[in-house]
Length: 330
Image (cartoon, rainbow, N blue to C red):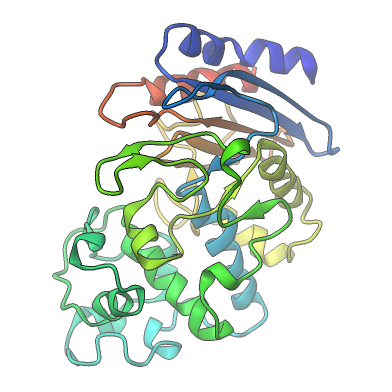
């Protein structure tokens, strides 16, 4: 495992040396539970400098969608609490209540998981106010125009609201799982962006603006270390703490690129070309990613702070992810 890690970490070491990313942690694991990881570069460069550590906490961004939200929704489906092919209104009856003939009335849990709805790809919800309860009502009662199916955070913001209704508490009050949290101590966290809206470098607080305004959401907000992410991947590989049906749905093809919540291997994807067809993965905007190859019994996570101190810079994150994936899969 250590030899594999040394080989696969070369692209990350080069990216740090060339100042394309401040720092990162690469971790690999197999179905036996063996892990190896290595840290490179700096966790923060502004306003102070700190070195990256193997145990640094990262804002996992959209890995929240798969590690937390997808897993919970699929577990609830397996327990019979909800029907994936039922409309969201079966749990949230006030969703789109003012538009009885709208396409919104027919949106299902499965469609949201697979990004097969008509919601917009990007929507700056946080610019409409900072009251989290009012913003939830905005999401539920806006007459969203139906567009072509695209990857959309709105799908998972809605699934987060579903979880809140079922559990009777806000997402930030829910247990995010072993090794995960909804924030991190600044001295232990990799910094993200110098945010022009909040007027500071974000360290240990969520980077995603919509999640910050909602004070917790289903699409972003989870924090964790490389070890925690690999432990989760081990559970998926071994179906050790998850229902077999949950893992089966994570692997089930919904489209050429997607399963329930996850991406599946396709041409040009972030996991590289060397992995098997039985590989799923997901990335996060802050520079994070997790990939699980069931055929090889192997998982890897590449966590970087590529948006620090700004997102407005070509970090080369996609070719970096693909290069690492190809070396892990050799």
